[in-house]
Image (cartoon, rainbow over all chains, first blue to last red; front, side, top):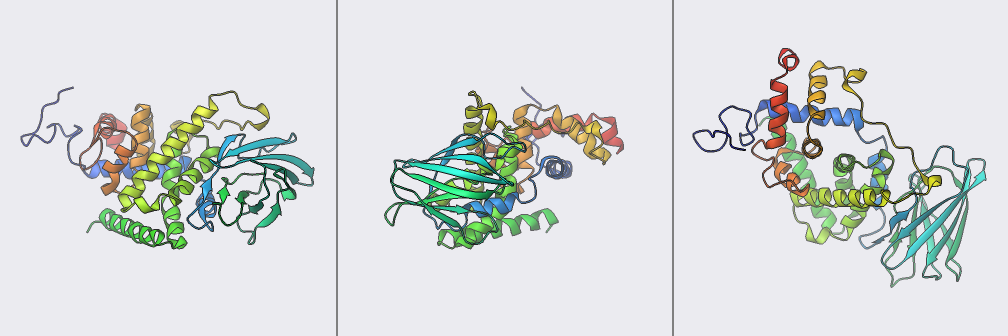
Length: 171
Length: 194
């Protein structure tokens, strides 16, 4: 596409060309787009706090386990158990979330390769994390978790291994 | 100094200072970076078509990955660019995964599209005209402008590049997408009148 250029060769002369310097109208457009997107499709309350929570308190040396299967968000009408799989380079974490009645859930987890490890469950605003241990088969159980309240799993395998963290999810 | 430039200096300075603390191993520096830039990354993920319910997943990955990369990131602009690129890549990864059959028991309702400007959610006439014109742009242009609108001017160029847009697609100069939107607005009588 060729558009006539201004005398200094920096842009078209009609004032709407791509290469003109940004002016007050451009600034207005960008400011309105910023505000409109925040208003119509901005982050929900608590989003930033959740992000701060997800990275806080791990020190600067963690391995990230990615969600490979399942959904992090709970469904409103959840009756069937749901399964999530997280994969890090050195470890897989699988959790099965089952209704335990009374707005509580039971979480059955496995880590692979199977080994004894400490599993921490962190909840935003809850202070101390809840800790359980895996057995020789890499299994762990956490009962009576409040449904829908975000948790993050941290697996610690001893002083020589980097902790593995999952993203937060809603049980 | 005009307000826009003053804000810019403040935010860039805040990020520079927080980055220095974070790189020195102070976790409060990292917290401040996360507070400052999480809303931007929300919009990056949404502009890539990530469901609202899954943005937290995508953006958390970016933050957790940053933790081990802090050593190589030395300026606020480099930090912003790295985070935008990483979030876009995470969004792609999620979208690819979503294209494979999913377990219906774990399916989340797909959210409704963004509001129609006629729906009455946008009260200001100028905003309504702008929103209508914006929806006429290509996906690529909407993605670019949505994210660029969230950052301060010195970062326009670096963010455009981080999104994989041609060098200089927006920066000190206007760029094709903004020029198109501007032309649509200038051709609209109700924009001129409002």
